[in-house]
Image 1 (cartoon, rainbow, N blue to C red):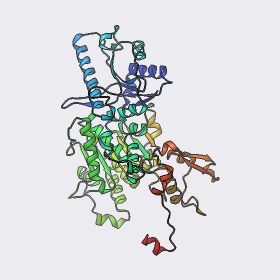
Image 2: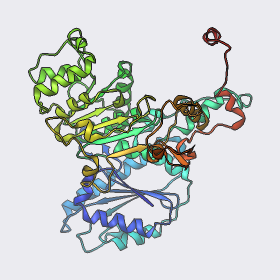
Image 3: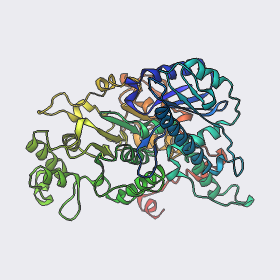
Image 4: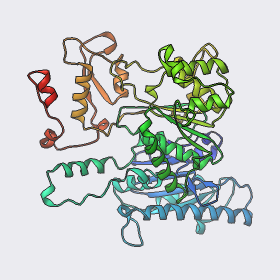
Length: 504
C-alpha cells in the first residue's frame, strides 16, 4: 500500500504514524492507498474536521480511522469523540452516495465504508462501538473485512471525497451506435479519462506545507485546476487566512474565480468563498481601476506605484517596477498575505517572485511552473537563484526545506499530460525542438530533465552530447486513442510555398 501525507502534523502524532506504518507493512503486498489527514470536512458554521487515516483498496473498501489522545475514559469526552466519528462516517457515506457511479442501488454503495475509532492511551477496547486502543486490535478488525470491488470504483470514491469531481466531471454526451467512430465519441473517451485526479495531482492539490512549494508540469498536466483546489482547500481549513492567487494571462480571471467557487461550494456544502476579504484573485500588475499584486503592495507599503508609461522607458516594464519595489522595501515588505499562489509562474521574471515572497508570511509561496512553455528557454529553474538577491543571497533552498517534512514533497513533478495523446505530444516536441533538423533548435540539459517531463531516455546521455534515443512513457500520456483514428488528431500538409500555407 502506498502512503500519502496531506499535512505536516504527522511530525507530532507518533501514535498515528505508528499505526500507519504497521498497516502499511502488514498489507504491503495489497494494492491500495493509505491517506493521512484526508478528506477535510466542513459543516455549515462549524470547524473543519479531518479524519486521521483513510485506507482505500479493492479488498477493504474505504476504512476511516479517527484518532483521539484522551488519557482517561470519561463519558463526556467519549461522547464528543463518538459524535466526531458519526459526523465523519455520515459525510463519507453521503458524499459517495451523491455519485451515481458508486451507487449499487437507491440505498447502498458499490464499496463498503467502515469507520473506526483509535484511542491509543486507553487500556480497553469498545468493540461494540468500533473503538480500539491498540494497533493489534485495529489490524485484527481489518482482517475480518471481506470486500470485493474494482480499482475503478476505489478511484471514483477517492475522487468524490477530494472534491475534484466538482469541476472536471465530464459533460454527459448521449451517443448512438452510429457515433462509434465519430469525433464526438473520441471526445467522450478523452473526457472520461481525465475526469479524475491522479496521485500526483491529488498530492499537489491537497498537501499543506508550512513553507514554499513548487509544482512542475507540462501544459495539460492540470496545474491551474490543482492550484484552484489548493486555494479553496486553504480557505476552508484556515478561514481567517488571507490567500493571494495571481496569474499572468488576464483572460484566466473568470475561470479561476469559477474553479475556486465550485471547489469551495462542494467542500462546504454550498457556501461561497470570501473573495472580498480572504481569497484575493488578482492579476500581477493592477492599477487604479483594477486591483493587482504590484499596485496593492505599493499602496500597503506607502510606495507610489510606477505608471506603465514611466516603466516602459526602462525596457522590461514589469521587471523594472518589481525590482524597484523590492529595493524600496529591501525585500522585507509588510506581510499582506498568509499564502501566495502563483499560476503560470514560468511567464514571470524573478523580480515578481521576489516581490511575492516579500509580502507573504513564513515563505508560504506556492508556484506552478511549466519549464518547456518557451522552447527557446528550457533551463531548469533553480529556486535558490530565483529568490536570491543582495538582501538575501541564499534565496529558497527546496532541498533544505524538504528536510523539515521528510514524508511530504515541496517540489512536485506532474509527469502526466492529459491535453494530448502520446503521438501528438511526441510530434510537437520533435517539431518544437527541431530534433530531426540538421541542427537542434533546443535541447534539455540532462537525462533527469527529460524524465521529469515524463519521457524515458532509452539510450545515451544528454549532458555529454551523445546520440540519444527518447521515448514517451505510456503512463505519462494516459489518453488512449485507437490507432486507426490517429488521423483525426494529426494531419500533415506540405505547402509548395508560403502563400499556399496561409491559404490552408
